[in-house]
Image 1: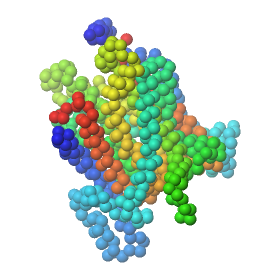
Image 2: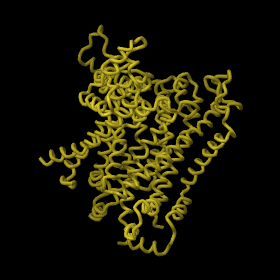
Image 3: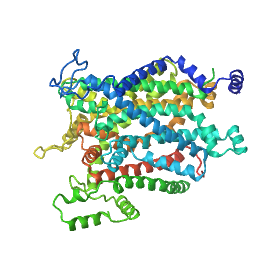
Image 4: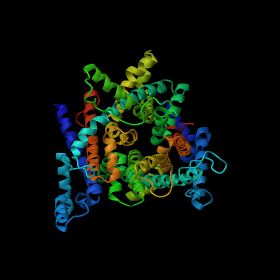
Length: 296
Length: 333
């Protein structure tokens, strides 16, 4: 009773939107801000590689293999004399490319299908979509990627396709649950009553209220994609040309046994800092945008 | 009787799922998959041989016929022979699955028990230092790549750069014939070598999964702690620790058990893909890895399809287990 009253009073006294409230709440979260700054730095590095400002000489071979740390080579060199620092920087771009492509596509597909399934809850459309993600969830991820790699031989984007094909299911499930809740609210019924078409209702009135879920899901998919890339590259299913933290870690497997830790430390350091920052950012985002937690 | 009816209904409901899973596996790996004719025949094959093998593999048949052929393979567990070694796929699996279980099971049990324990501690001290330390540990654990941890643990435990306590790679060999070992010596031999080879992989997979487990279990327990009956129990003057273990944990058990059972098929095969390959353990993971890298379709086909089918059955089993454990879940729905 008390909480209902408080929510009622709160909704009367402030006319803030969900987003401005979330933003205010997020700004107070010191860990969230710190994480966002770290992610921003990585994004700038990746952008710089993409437009060609730095990290372009990662494939240059020299005859100075397995050098230690020096002013020319900040993290030393690898077996064939490539500069590890440049490779780690160039790997940032690969990580962002994989992460962004997978996160955006998977969230888009999951969001659209989830909204449709939730809105047509109880009909055959809902059943079909639920069946689809049930099937996807039943096949272990790495094996599913292997299966797709078999089907799409010699396609460099098999990894991206496979990740998108699996990652949409969790977004779809969550969005569907939220849309089922939203669809029973009065304003949707009102829109329905005045004859707005179902697809317009979904597009204009339902999905905007699931954006905060999709945002959090996108950050989670991003982290998942970066981490999966490493394992898939190790399994020989991932990045084929170019450099990534996965290729660096795979190279380092035999190097560490001979006492050369440069590749391993550089790749895992870059990877760990980005992933932990993204995880913290996702947590802060979730806390900030969860309407149940917005009371003050 | 009611339970049996329920189980049968659940089985019937799972048919579309089984159908979908096999259809995906078939479409990806058989229909659009690589043409096996030449890998079976080798370089010097006559056109007649090629023709007959293609016929035997059903490449001239329409989609539906080939799907039915595939279903027959799945049901009879006859996936043919491995391309690289020529061994029967079913006998490869029979040989390797027990090894994978032996490797994965200790880690699986320990990481789940530890996860529940840490989650209870964190939830009990919610918002305090203990909670924060456990959660920071969980996020750090979650943020490390599997490959990173495997490499680091191998260096730390198995090489001269670290502690050098365990061998880098390998698996238990049977006792050599020339040694006449008694009963207790045999047991000691296997026990010793089992732990010698399995300790580092176990520590690795505990480290990898503990963060995820703890976070999930804590969320479940915290949600349960917000329920009304907890407040009532507190009002009755029952101690906090008692409430946690006797009431909250008991009620939180359903999502926890679901997660544990559902993750089992994935942990055994998918999780071992990296681990077994890395530590040279001859289990399903290693066989599958080799099959993926060599393009050995029959093996991958069998592993993918059967993992998915086992997962579907694990889902059914958890559902049935609920009804048996939890009186609140009704049979009729």
